[in-house]
Each structure stands twice: as C-alpha cells, then as structure tokens.
Length: 232
Image (cartoon, rainbow, N blue to C red; front, side, top):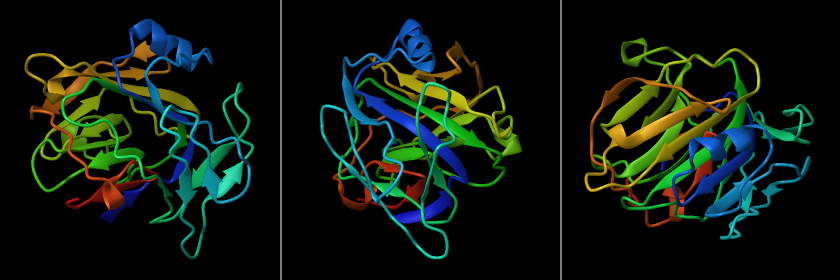
C-alpha cells in the first residue's frame, strides 16, 4: 500500500465491531461503559511505551508501531478523562500496522475511536481494504475538502464513494467518533451513520456507491494513523 495522508494528532481506545452498534451503545462507549458483544478488534492504547499495541478484541491481532525518521510514534499520558494513555501520530508513515483483514463484504460493522487533532490536510484515522475498484475499501478520516462539506468533520471513503458528517472537530480537543453501518438488502454508503461524542451527527454530503469491502490482508490490513491506497 501507499500512504496518502497521515493523522497529525492523537488516537485512543480504537474499536472495531462486526455488527451495528445501537445509538444507546454508542452513547455508552463515549461515556466509558463499553460493550464486548461483537468486538473483533480493540486497541486501548494504554501501554505508554514500546512498539507493540495489544489487541483485546476477539481476534487477538496485536499491532506494531512503525517508527520512521524523523519522528517515531509517541506515547502520551494526555488522554480522555477515563483513559490512561494515548498514541501520538506526527509523521508521514507514522502508523500502527496489524495483520487483521478487517470486516469484509457487506457485513454490518461499527468503528469507534477517541481522537484529538487540529488538522486541515489529507489524513487517515483507520482503514482497510482494496482501493483499486469502487466500494472495496473502508477508510475513516476527517474531511479536508470544502466541496464535500465542513473541513474537519468525520468522513468515510469506500473508493469513489464518500460520506461526510456535519460537525467540524479539528479543534484540538478530545472527541469520541463512531461510524456505523447496518447491512440491508441494498448495502450502500448511504446506510452509514455518524456519531460524535455520543450523539448522532447528521450526514452533510455523500456520493452513493455500493459497499463490498475486500481485503486479502498484508499491506491493506487494518492500519491506524494513515490512509493507505492500492490493491491487495
């Protein structure tokens, strides 16, 4: 894969579920009352040191921190009130790699994370999948295109399909984000729902493309801290 944009900020308590979370469950997560049902990947990011991040999800796919020059990933004790540490991403290719292929096909899924940033340029928070054809990838980031909606709002891309939330959150404060997709008879990016700090954040803009996430692992497995492009 090729890194197109890194995430200049901090991430904490990153989770992937292989099901749709309800609004009530998202609100509980943002208030530090997590639900374990369907939790396939969970990085608390509480290590505080070292180059490994433990996955407490059902898949046990620990992550490896990549430390390119000049700035390696940095652990910090600056975290949301109920958490201990966080991970600072500050450099292109400053990533957390896993070997987990991610939730694929049209399966329901939810991705949640705490984040803090003041970014205003191309970036990636968490993603996986094949970017060679429409609808095959799943990349969460913040929007940087004013033509697509508020700069700094939550954004999901699935290759030539994208959806953008309403509220800008590149304010240098901790926020909780959730991106939820429920499979139906016609799975499409228009089925994606955003939550910000436990509350529904309405969709401001979307280009509709069917969802069919494909990944054979390797360089396009689940990655934190950057937006990877390419074919598996």
